[in-house]
Length: 420
Image (cartoon, rainbow, N blue to C red; front, side, top):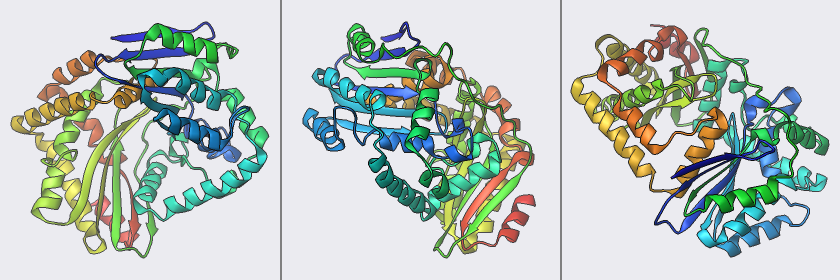
Protein backbone atom coordinates (compact mmCIF):
# COMPACT_ATOMS: atom_id res chain seq x y z
CA UNK A 1 0.00 0.00 0.00
CA UNK A 2 1.16 3.51 -0.86
CA UNK A 3 0.26 6.63 1.10
CA UNK A 4 0.76 10.35 0.48
CA UNK A 5 -0.10 13.47 2.42
CA UNK A 6 0.84 17.14 2.30
CA UNK A 7 1.05 18.80 5.70
CA UNK A 8 -0.40 22.30 6.27
CA UNK A 9 3.04 23.91 5.90
CA UNK A 10 3.61 22.26 2.47
CA UNK A 11 5.91 19.41 3.54
CA UNK A 12 5.06 16.13 1.81
CA UNK A 13 5.00 12.67 3.41
CA UNK A 14 5.03 9.48 1.34
CA UNK A 15 5.24 5.87 2.49
CA UNK A 16 4.89 2.29 1.35
CA UNK A 17 3.60 -0.34 3.75
CA UNK A 18 5.53 -3.59 3.31
CA UNK A 19 3.88 -6.45 5.20
CA UNK A 20 6.19 -9.09 6.61
CA UNK A 21 9.20 -6.79 7.04
CA UNK A 22 10.63 -6.04 10.49
CA UNK A 23 12.59 -2.98 9.39
CA UNK A 24 11.78 0.56 8.28
CA UNK A 25 13.84 2.82 6.03
CA UNK A 26 13.09 6.52 6.44
CA UNK A 27 14.57 9.55 4.72
CA UNK A 28 14.28 13.31 4.77
CA UNK A 29 14.74 14.69 1.26
CA UNK A 30 15.27 18.23 0.08
CA UNK A 31 14.90 19.32 -3.52
CA UNK A 32 18.30 20.90 -3.70
CA UNK A 33 21.61 19.77 -5.15
CA UNK A 34 24.68 21.12 -6.87
CA UNK A 35 22.52 22.31 -9.80
CA UNK A 36 20.77 24.74 -7.43
CA UNK A 37 23.91 26.58 -6.35
CA UNK A 38 23.38 30.11 -7.58
CA UNK A 39 26.89 31.52 -7.94
CA UNK A 40 30.59 30.68 -7.93
CA UNK A 41 31.00 31.19 -4.18
CA UNK A 42 28.32 28.54 -3.54
CA UNK A 43 30.00 25.75 -5.53
CA UNK A 44 29.86 22.64 -3.34
CA UNK A 45 27.79 24.22 -0.54
CA UNK A 46 24.96 21.65 -0.80
CA UNK A 47 27.39 18.79 -0.25
CA UNK A 48 29.24 20.71 2.49
CA UNK A 49 25.98 21.26 4.38
CA UNK A 50 25.31 17.52 4.17
CA UNK A 51 28.63 16.95 5.96
CA UNK A 52 28.02 19.66 8.56
CA UNK A 53 24.62 18.39 9.65
CA UNK A 54 26.36 15.37 11.20
CA UNK A 55 28.73 17.57 13.24
CA UNK A 56 26.39 18.36 16.09
CA UNK A 57 23.01 19.90 16.86
CA UNK A 58 21.74 22.11 19.66
CA UNK A 59 21.27 19.03 21.87
CA UNK A 60 23.65 16.39 20.45
CA UNK A 61 27.37 16.34 19.76
CA UNK A 62 28.76 14.54 16.71
CA UNK A 63 29.87 11.69 18.96
CA UNK A 64 26.44 11.45 20.56
CA UNK A 65 24.81 11.26 17.11
CA UNK A 66 27.05 8.31 16.20
CA UNK A 67 26.58 6.59 19.57
CA UNK A 68 22.82 7.02 19.51
CA UNK A 69 22.45 5.47 16.07
CA UNK A 70 24.75 2.60 17.03
CA UNK A 71 22.64 2.01 20.14
CA UNK A 72 19.54 1.83 17.93
CA UNK A 73 21.23 -0.87 15.88
CA UNK A 74 20.57 1.05 12.68
CA UNK A 75 22.38 2.52 9.71
CA UNK A 76 22.51 6.31 9.28
CA UNK A 77 23.79 8.02 6.14
CA UNK A 78 23.25 10.80 3.61
CA UNK A 79 24.01 11.68 0.02
CA UNK A 80 24.04 14.73 -2.23
CA UNK A 81 23.26 14.55 -5.94
CA UNK A 82 22.90 17.16 -8.64
CA UNK A 83 19.24 17.82 -7.85
CA UNK A 84 18.47 16.51 -4.37
CA UNK A 85 19.90 15.68 -0.94
CA UNK A 86 18.74 12.87 1.34
CA UNK A 87 19.37 12.07 5.02
CA UNK A 88 18.27 8.52 5.70
CA UNK A 89 18.32 5.63 8.14
CA UNK A 90 17.32 1.97 8.28
CA UNK A 91 16.26 0.55 11.64
CA UNK A 92 14.06 -2.06 13.28
CA UNK A 93 10.40 -1.05 13.21
CA UNK A 94 10.25 -0.29 16.95
CA UNK A 95 13.03 2.30 16.62
CA UNK A 96 11.23 4.61 14.19
CA UNK A 97 10.34 7.29 16.76
CA UNK A 98 13.87 7.63 18.12
CA UNK A 99 15.34 7.52 14.62
CA UNK A 100 13.11 10.24 13.23
CA UNK A 101 13.81 12.40 16.27
CA UNK A 102 17.51 12.11 15.41
CA UNK A 103 17.07 12.68 11.66
CA UNK A 104 14.86 15.73 12.10
CA UNK A 105 17.26 17.15 14.71
CA UNK A 106 20.11 16.92 12.17
CA UNK A 107 18.14 18.71 9.47
CA UNK A 108 16.47 21.38 11.59
CA UNK A 109 18.78 22.10 14.53
CA UNK A 110 22.35 21.73 13.38
CA UNK A 111 24.77 24.04 15.19
CA UNK A 112 26.94 24.65 12.11
CA UNK A 113 29.76 25.31 14.55
CA UNK A 114 32.53 27.50 13.01
CA UNK A 115 35.32 25.38 14.54
CA UNK A 116 33.76 22.20 13.17
CA UNK A 117 33.39 23.94 9.83
CA UNK A 118 37.11 24.63 9.60
CA UNK A 119 37.91 20.98 10.34
CA UNK A 120 35.32 19.74 7.85
CA UNK A 121 36.70 22.00 5.13
CA UNK A 122 39.89 19.96 5.34
CA UNK A 123 37.89 16.73 5.06
CA UNK A 124 36.00 17.91 1.97
CA UNK A 125 39.14 19.28 0.34
CA UNK A 126 40.69 15.83 0.75
CA UNK A 127 37.53 14.33 -0.75
CA UNK A 128 37.99 16.62 -3.76
CA UNK A 129 41.64 15.56 -4.00
CA UNK A 130 40.61 11.91 -3.74
CA UNK A 131 38.15 12.38 -6.60
CA UNK A 132 40.93 13.94 -8.69
CA UNK A 133 43.04 10.84 -7.99
CA UNK A 134 40.18 8.41 -8.75
CA UNK A 135 40.08 8.15 -12.55
CA UNK A 136 36.58 6.67 -12.78
CA UNK A 137 35.17 9.57 -10.72
CA UNK A 138 37.20 12.15 -12.61
CA UNK A 139 36.21 10.92 -16.05
CA UNK A 140 32.50 11.15 -15.15
CA UNK A 141 32.96 14.70 -13.81
CA UNK A 142 34.71 15.66 -17.04
CA UNK A 143 31.89 14.05 -19.03
CA UNK A 144 29.29 16.18 -17.22
CA UNK A 145 31.31 19.30 -17.98
CA UNK A 146 31.70 18.29 -21.63
CA UNK A 147 28.02 17.52 -22.15
CA UNK A 148 26.37 20.24 -20.06
CA UNK A 149 28.97 22.98 -20.51
CA UNK A 150 27.99 26.02 -18.42
CA UNK A 151 24.59 24.57 -17.47
CA UNK A 152 24.21 23.95 -13.69
CA UNK A 153 24.09 20.18 -14.26
CA UNK A 154 27.70 20.38 -15.39
CA UNK A 155 28.89 21.54 -11.97
CA UNK A 156 30.79 19.06 -9.77
CA UNK A 157 28.85 18.07 -6.65
CA UNK A 158 31.92 18.51 -4.42
CA UNK A 159 32.63 22.06 -5.59
CA UNK A 160 36.23 23.21 -5.75
CA UNK A 161 38.95 23.86 -3.20
CA UNK A 162 38.63 27.64 -3.41
CA UNK A 163 34.87 27.74 -2.92
CA UNK A 164 34.89 25.22 -0.06
CA UNK A 165 37.63 27.03 1.81
CA UNK A 166 35.67 30.28 1.50
CA UNK A 167 32.40 29.10 3.12
CA UNK A 168 31.23 30.98 6.22
CA UNK A 169 28.61 29.94 8.73
CA UNK A 170 26.31 32.66 7.43
CA UNK A 171 26.66 31.29 3.88
CA UNK A 172 25.33 27.94 5.09
CA UNK A 173 22.50 29.53 7.05
CA UNK A 174 21.43 31.70 4.11
CA UNK A 175 21.48 28.75 1.71
CA UNK A 176 19.45 26.52 4.04
CA UNK A 177 16.90 29.26 4.67
CA UNK A 178 16.48 29.56 0.91
CA UNK A 179 16.41 25.86 0.01
CA UNK A 180 15.45 23.86 3.15
CA UNK A 181 11.84 25.03 3.15
CA UNK A 182 8.74 22.84 3.68
CA UNK A 183 7.65 22.95 0.05
CA UNK A 184 11.07 21.56 -0.91
CA UNK A 185 11.06 18.82 1.75
CA UNK A 186 9.78 15.26 1.50
CA UNK A 187 9.76 12.55 4.17
CA UNK A 188 9.65 9.05 2.70
CA UNK A 189 9.46 5.70 4.47
CA UNK A 190 9.12 2.05 3.48
CA UNK A 191 8.71 -1.10 5.53
CA UNK A 192 6.46 -2.06 8.39
CA UNK A 193 5.33 1.54 8.87
CA UNK A 194 2.06 2.92 10.26
CA UNK A 195 1.38 5.91 8.00
CA UNK A 196 -0.80 7.82 10.45
CA UNK A 197 1.84 7.48 13.14
CA UNK A 198 4.53 8.58 10.70
CA UNK A 199 2.53 11.69 9.79
CA UNK A 200 2.07 12.48 13.49
CA UNK A 201 5.85 12.20 13.98
CA UNK A 202 6.58 14.48 11.03
CA UNK A 203 3.99 17.01 12.19
CA UNK A 204 5.43 16.99 15.70
CA UNK A 205 9.07 17.40 14.64
CA UNK A 206 8.78 19.44 11.43
CA UNK A 207 5.30 20.95 11.38
CA UNK A 208 6.51 24.21 12.92
CA UNK A 209 8.62 25.08 9.86
CA UNK A 210 7.01 28.16 8.30
CA UNK A 211 5.70 27.78 4.76
CA UNK A 212 7.72 29.58 2.09
CA UNK A 213 4.54 30.19 0.08
CA UNK A 214 5.80 28.25 -2.91
CA UNK A 215 8.63 25.84 -3.66
CA UNK A 216 11.73 27.52 -5.11
CA UNK A 217 12.01 25.73 -8.46
CA UNK A 218 15.36 27.11 -9.68
CA UNK A 219 16.19 24.72 -12.47
CA UNK A 220 17.26 25.61 -15.98
CA UNK A 221 15.99 23.91 -19.14
CA UNK A 222 18.66 22.19 -21.22
CA UNK A 223 18.90 20.99 -24.80
CA UNK A 224 22.08 19.39 -26.22
CA UNK A 225 23.75 21.75 -28.66
CA UNK A 226 26.78 20.03 -30.16
CA UNK A 227 29.70 17.74 -29.46
CA UNK A 228 32.68 18.27 -27.17
CA UNK A 229 35.49 16.26 -25.61
CA UNK A 230 37.45 16.88 -22.42
CA UNK A 231 40.60 14.96 -21.52
CA UNK A 232 43.01 14.76 -18.61
CA UNK A 233 46.40 13.19 -19.31
CA UNK A 234 47.60 11.19 -16.27
CA UNK A 235 50.44 8.65 -15.88
CA UNK A 236 48.16 5.74 -14.91
CA UNK A 237 47.92 2.20 -16.27
CA UNK A 238 44.37 2.33 -17.63
CA UNK A 239 42.68 4.83 -19.90
CA UNK A 240 39.20 5.66 -18.58
CA UNK A 241 36.74 6.60 -21.31
CA UNK A 242 33.19 7.94 -21.34
CA UNK A 243 30.76 8.75 -24.15
CA UNK A 244 27.49 10.62 -23.64
CA UNK A 245 24.47 11.21 -25.88
CA UNK A 246 20.99 12.64 -25.11
CA UNK A 247 18.49 10.78 -22.96
CA UNK A 248 15.15 11.73 -21.39
CA UNK A 249 13.98 13.72 -18.38
CA UNK A 250 13.32 11.73 -15.22
CA UNK A 251 9.52 11.77 -15.57
CA UNK A 252 9.39 10.93 -19.30
CA UNK A 253 7.71 7.60 -20.08
CA UNK A 254 10.28 7.07 -22.85
CA UNK A 255 12.68 5.96 -20.10
CA UNK A 256 10.98 2.56 -20.04
CA UNK A 257 11.93 1.98 -23.67
CA UNK A 258 15.38 3.49 -23.11
CA UNK A 259 16.00 1.11 -20.19
CA UNK A 260 15.12 -1.88 -22.35
CA UNK A 261 17.54 -0.65 -25.01
CA UNK A 262 20.22 -0.04 -22.37
CA UNK A 263 20.13 -3.66 -21.20
CA UNK A 264 20.68 -4.90 -24.73
CA UNK A 265 23.34 -2.33 -25.62
CA UNK A 266 25.60 -2.22 -22.56
CA UNK A 267 23.66 -2.74 -19.35
CA UNK A 268 24.13 -6.48 -18.85
CA UNK A 269 26.56 -9.37 -19.29
CA UNK A 270 24.74 -10.47 -22.45
CA UNK A 271 24.76 -6.96 -23.90
CA UNK A 272 26.47 -6.14 -27.17
CA UNK A 273 29.22 -3.99 -25.64
CA UNK A 274 30.08 -6.49 -22.90
CA UNK A 275 30.19 -9.40 -25.30
CA UNK A 276 32.10 -7.62 -28.06
CA UNK A 277 34.61 -5.61 -26.01
CA UNK A 278 35.23 -7.90 -23.02
CA UNK A 279 34.26 -11.43 -23.95
CA UNK A 280 35.19 -11.59 -27.65
CA UNK A 281 38.22 -9.27 -27.70
CA UNK A 282 39.40 -9.12 -24.08
CA UNK A 283 39.99 -5.37 -24.29
CA UNK A 284 38.36 -4.30 -21.01
CA UNK A 285 37.39 -5.65 -17.62
CA UNK A 286 34.69 -3.04 -17.07
CA UNK A 287 32.36 -1.75 -19.79
CA UNK A 288 28.77 -0.63 -19.30
CA UNK A 289 26.11 1.86 -20.37
CA UNK A 290 23.45 3.58 -18.29
CA UNK A 291 20.70 6.22 -18.63
CA UNK A 292 20.43 9.13 -16.18
CA UNK A 293 17.33 11.32 -15.80
CA UNK A 294 17.16 14.86 -14.45
CA UNK A 295 14.25 17.25 -14.05
CA UNK A 296 14.77 19.04 -17.37
CA UNK A 297 16.67 16.49 -19.47
CA UNK A 298 18.52 13.18 -19.48
CA UNK A 299 21.67 11.47 -20.71
CA UNK A 300 22.73 8.07 -21.96
CA UNK A 301 26.36 7.21 -21.19
CA UNK A 302 28.96 4.53 -21.84
CA UNK A 303 32.00 3.92 -19.60
CA UNK A 304 34.99 1.63 -20.00
CA UNK A 305 38.51 1.29 -18.65
CA UNK A 306 41.14 -0.11 -21.05
CA UNK A 307 44.85 -0.26 -21.73
CA UNK A 308 45.80 3.12 -23.21
CA UNK A 309 47.13 1.40 -26.35
CA UNK A 310 43.59 0.18 -27.10
CA UNK A 311 41.71 3.40 -26.28
CA UNK A 312 41.00 4.52 -29.84
CA UNK A 313 40.07 0.97 -30.87
CA UNK A 314 37.51 0.61 -28.08
CA UNK A 315 35.97 4.02 -28.74
CA UNK A 316 35.65 3.08 -32.41
CA UNK A 317 33.96 -0.20 -31.44
CA UNK A 318 31.42 1.60 -29.26
CA UNK A 319 30.58 4.10 -32.00
CA UNK A 320 30.37 1.35 -34.63
CA UNK A 321 27.91 -0.54 -32.44
CA UNK A 322 25.82 2.60 -31.97
CA UNK A 323 25.69 3.17 -35.72
CA UNK A 324 24.87 -0.46 -36.45
CA UNK A 325 21.93 -0.42 -34.05
CA UNK A 326 20.77 2.96 -35.38
CA UNK A 327 20.63 1.47 -38.89
CA UNK A 328 19.47 -2.09 -38.17
CA UNK A 329 17.89 -1.98 -34.71
CA UNK A 330 17.79 -4.94 -32.33
CA UNK A 331 16.61 -8.43 -33.09
CA UNK A 332 13.33 -9.56 -31.59
CA UNK A 333 15.26 -12.08 -29.48
CA UNK A 334 17.54 -9.37 -28.06
CA UNK A 335 14.55 -7.16 -27.34
CA UNK A 336 12.56 -9.86 -25.52
CA UNK A 337 15.57 -10.96 -23.46
CA UNK A 338 16.35 -7.39 -22.45
CA UNK A 339 12.76 -6.63 -21.53
CA UNK A 340 12.44 -9.70 -19.33
CA UNK A 341 15.75 -8.91 -17.67
CA UNK A 342 14.62 -5.37 -16.89
CA UNK A 343 11.39 -6.67 -15.40
CA UNK A 344 13.21 -9.26 -13.29
CA UNK A 345 15.83 -6.81 -12.05
CA UNK A 346 13.12 -4.36 -11.04
CA UNK A 347 11.24 -7.02 -9.06
CA UNK A 348 14.43 -8.16 -7.30
CA UNK A 349 15.13 -4.55 -6.32
CA UNK A 350 11.79 -4.39 -4.52
CA UNK A 351 13.04 -6.76 -1.82
CA UNK A 352 14.79 -3.90 0.04
CA UNK A 353 13.06 -1.31 2.22
CA UNK A 354 15.90 1.11 1.47
CA UNK A 355 15.47 0.70 -2.29
CA UNK A 356 11.76 1.41 -2.04
CA UNK A 357 12.24 4.38 0.30
CA UNK A 358 14.72 5.85 -2.18
CA UNK A 359 12.46 5.22 -5.17
CA UNK A 360 9.35 6.86 -3.77
CA UNK A 361 11.27 9.66 -2.05
CA UNK A 362 13.22 10.61 -5.17
CA UNK A 363 10.13 10.43 -7.37
CA UNK A 364 8.06 12.75 -5.18
CA UNK A 365 10.98 15.10 -4.54
CA UNK A 366 11.96 15.56 -8.19
CA UNK A 367 8.71 14.99 -10.09
CA UNK A 368 5.96 15.59 -7.55
CA UNK A 369 4.48 12.24 -8.56
CA UNK A 370 4.53 8.78 -7.03
CA UNK A 371 4.80 5.80 -9.34
CA UNK A 372 3.66 2.55 -7.78
CA UNK A 373 5.42 -0.71 -8.57
CA UNK A 374 2.34 -1.77 -10.54
CA UNK A 375 2.63 1.35 -12.70
CA UNK A 376 6.34 0.76 -13.26
CA UNK A 377 5.80 -2.86 -14.23
CA UNK A 378 2.98 -1.80 -16.56
CA UNK A 379 5.36 0.73 -18.13
CA UNK A 380 7.93 -2.01 -18.78
CA UNK A 381 5.30 -4.40 -20.12
CA UNK A 382 3.99 -1.72 -22.51
CA UNK A 383 7.34 -1.34 -24.29
CA UNK A 384 7.27 -2.83 -27.79
CA UNK A 385 10.09 -3.31 -30.26
CA UNK A 386 8.67 -0.40 -32.27
CA UNK A 387 8.40 1.93 -29.26
CA UNK A 388 11.96 1.06 -28.27
CA UNK A 389 13.14 1.87 -31.81
CA UNK A 390 11.39 5.24 -31.54
CA UNK A 391 13.87 6.41 -28.85
CA UNK A 392 16.98 5.57 -30.88
CA UNK A 393 17.08 8.64 -33.18
CA UNK A 394 17.45 10.85 -30.11
CA UNK A 395 19.74 8.58 -28.11
CA UNK A 396 22.07 7.62 -30.96
CA UNK A 397 22.51 11.18 -32.20
CA UNK A 398 26.18 11.55 -33.24
CA UNK A 399 25.83 15.33 -33.63
CA UNK A 400 25.33 15.64 -29.85
CA UNK A 401 27.91 13.05 -28.81
CA UNK A 402 30.28 14.22 -26.07
CA UNK A 403 33.18 12.33 -24.50
CA UNK A 404 35.82 12.40 -21.80
CA UNK A 405 39.06 10.52 -21.22
CA UNK A 406 41.59 10.21 -18.39
CA UNK A 407 44.96 8.47 -18.63
CA UNK A 408 47.93 8.15 -20.96
CA UNK A 409 45.88 9.08 -23.99
CA UNK A 410 46.57 11.30 -27.00
CA UNK A 411 43.69 13.82 -27.17
CA UNK A 412 44.15 14.61 -30.87
CA UNK A 413 43.93 10.94 -31.86
CA UNK A 414 40.93 10.40 -29.62
CA UNK A 415 39.07 13.36 -31.11
CA UNK A 416 39.87 12.12 -34.60
CA UNK A 417 38.39 8.70 -33.72
CA UNK A 418 35.22 10.33 -32.42
CA UNK A 419 34.83 12.40 -35.57
CA UNK A 420 35.46 9.59 -38.04
